[in-house]
Length: 179
Image (tube, rainbow, N blue to C red; front, side, top):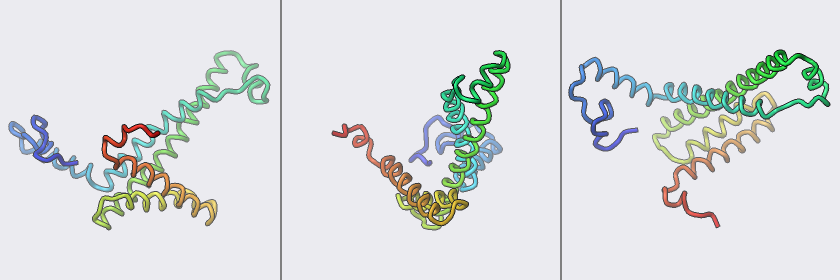
């Protein structure tokens, strides 16, 4: 994101670069180029999605519990406390890793696709996200058959359109009461 006139006092943000060596200026320039490239955006979205997914998976697995009435719960309840905790933490780790993989994959596919579409169209509008959502939803459902691909495409595109439309609203309309 470029700020008009830069940000005063922030080296490398288009503002004051006085006192910086040529090597520091080049480093900042290459970092900005990397963050603005489609590959950089894809990697960053994948990593951030994986982090969010790991936290989500950890939270959701901590809410899941087995009662002594179920088969798995009675097997765990009969173990000593240390082994019960070990089993619980293993399950939390598995759920967290699985969720991290899923969120990271979705983030990377969507962000990379949207960036490529935006580059080809040379426009930044709502339709880039809709098309990227359709391609992402379809790609994620490809192993379930053509009907699932169509539903995934439509569902992810609609969700992407709704989020993108909300994010593009002016600030005063976002805070306005609904009713």
